[in-house]
Amino acid sequence: MQPYSSPFYFVYLGIALIPIIIAHAYGKKAMWYQIIFTIAFLWLTFAGTVTLWALLGFGIYETILIKIYEFYRIKFKKNTFLIFLIILLFSILPLFIVKLTPVINPAHPQSIFGFLGISYVTFKTVNIILEIRDGLIKDVPLKEYFYFLYFFPTISSGPIDRFRRFRKELKNPIPENYSEMVGKGIFYIFQGFLYKYIIGYLIDTYILHDISIQASLHPSFGSMLVSMYSYGLYLFFDFAGYSLFVIGISSIMGYDIPHNFNKPFISKNIKDFWNRWHMSLSFWFRDFVAMRLMKTIMEKRWTKNMALIANLGYMASMGLMGFWHGFTWFYIVYGFYHAILLMGYDAWLRLKKKRKWKIPNNRWTSAVSIFITINLVFVGFLIFSGIPNIAIMYKLHLKVALPNF
Image 1 (tube, rainbow, N blue to C red):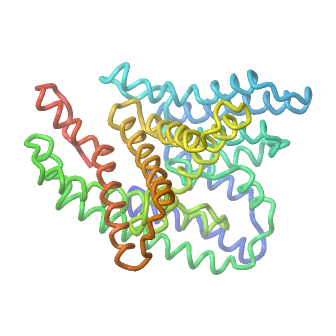
Image 2: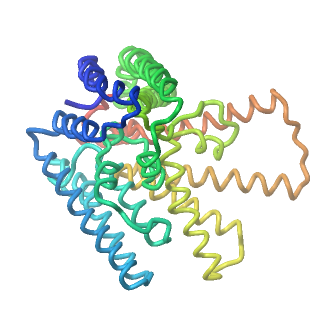
């Protein structure tokens, strides 16, 4: 059963959460029950499929890598880049195989190494390896690590959490505002229902489904334009709804999981957008890819051109984000498209400063900024949707599946 896929799923969840709520009300975390709760819902999701063994095998494999690297850092007190790189590449290897499989064998795109949520779980393990290298994580206790890795609400599609933050919450006592967290959690779940099962469903059923097929078979400016907006809105309400379910369930369990969305469609520029859209993912790439690359370039003194350094950071982080979604040209183009937008925005800021242009900051200029930003973002959504790719394939008389959102 897919997580959060039907109303009955929430009935099971509601019943299973009652003991946690009662325990928290009496000042007990009841970790033994939280572990049973996690195992039960992992079993409900993955049992009877090969992905259950892939999930367990992945956990064992990553644990061995992390404990080897932890032992190396503690025992030898060294920080050799080659050892770090080997551990990091082996950590990413299962995800790489899963993403590469559809390219090598399109007839059987599902890798035996894959399972629902492998991308997000890989982010967790890579985060731990990077912070062990930085000395921010000194030890990785297995109980805390496994609960973090397999924390059920977030396992399938995030939001992406950080081990140090999650570990701190595990150690802390029950929050004094737990009753408020339960109230917020219930509100988030109902908001998620509104987003995913009402607004998202209506957009998909009555607009996106038909127009995406029309745009694929008989592309025109109008059909592509409607597909662009309807897909972008559907993507937001579907994914934001899912994220609200995760945050709501986690809140009821007593965990303050990072949020993924913060009113992204009022963004005044592309940087503002990435500070509001899929925040746990964008912040991960910012912190662990862009900032690290920029720091390395400055430390090695490869160049003193700060604009070039920033641009390389954008290309690396956004490009990798594109590849992370899949080794398909439109995902890759989507990533580099946003890198170009970020580079263009920085160039605009430098030009304004150089020419000493004074642009007033009022509701009219804000409205223009929002309009330009969101339309550029929606162009990216159209690329990401794959609809233009299908239209091109049909134009070339190549067999390809019609979009099914």
